[in-house]
Length: 356
Image (cartoon, rainbow, N blue to C red):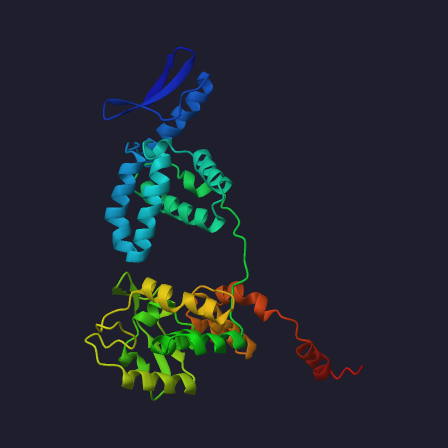
């Protein structure tokens, strides 16, 4: 037997002997000797089959910092990394920072989720917090800091699905008549391609395939720097309508050249500031046009709604939008795809030869 039982006060504790040193078995303190012996037998069995490992003590805040430096910075995009760092600094460290990793239980984590929701924080935001917590503990488990991963047992909050905001064709036309001429083609491209804001800001002249009437999405912009697109599926070729192609050609020919080869640049030939663009040239248009205000990203949703209205195939829509899967397309725009269409239903009768 590589160990034994020791009684302290009214509780029994198991210990094992490793290389001549006594090691107390974590969690073995019990009110009965039998329970402590069960823990001892488990630890001895692990020693004999080579799976026993000692818990390395490190506080949550220290390991979270180590995780960011040695793992997250290597594996994630700058925008994602910044989001992770904000979550750790503002939510996770204040809650768990001074605990050792192995002291944070599933119950504590679940209470964190529940209390965040109780303060009115949206389910999606809380889910994002939990993603970071799970990633940290997954790495901690692999590195031997914990023997059980409590983050695996967190129950995630439901995400309330809300219908996306879109502009009607009439509202789109009104918007384009009022927006400043200098930025009209930028917003027109957003509406007719569904490109994300960062993708538009990073669009270069060589990305326009004039012969095949397509735009090649190869990069994006985040905080004034070029980065790779959101996902591998975001790298795509978007078919361009004849009207948009003509407008882009006129815009490119009329614009002064710039060192970055940008289609849409600021007055100095550099990358436009996204926040300034939205604040000065996007938001004011809705008040002038007296139409409902939407977010810039809703122009992407508007593009999807126009595609659906024209009867485009969902798989084609997925490819043009750069969604990772067809399920994303259905989840986001399913309510538009499911609109009543009695004419389509009647075709079932026709093909089977049913008369009424």
